[in-house]
Length: 124
Image (cartoon, rainbow, N blue to C red; front, side, top):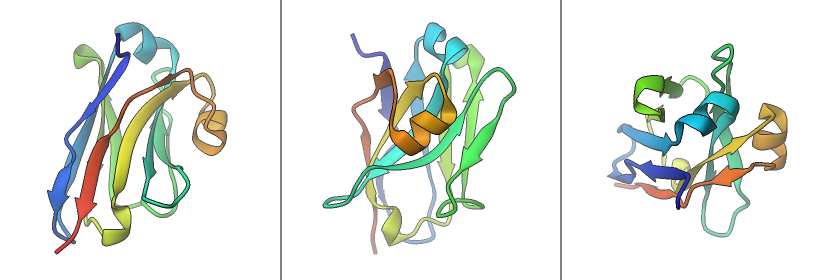
């Protein structure tokens, strides 16, 4: 049974926008930090952003700050990643994950649940 399911990826031109969704069980959203990651071909996985429920803390890596916005809808058990002004270097497989600590999740990849990902391609 999949605990995290991503959707919303696709092909978009540079400067365009996409909104990714990560649907999770209520248990996961209540107790875990949810992070978004991406991995481009031939490159290491990169933590992009995260959010928690307790205090709505959010964090963004410098490469996406000002362009991406993470949010959550508790009623829909979902976390979203709004991506604006997309660049070719944003291309990659995007997936969400849940972990107990935001630093360990985003920077060290220590997560308890992982989704399978949704592909984002930014190209003209």
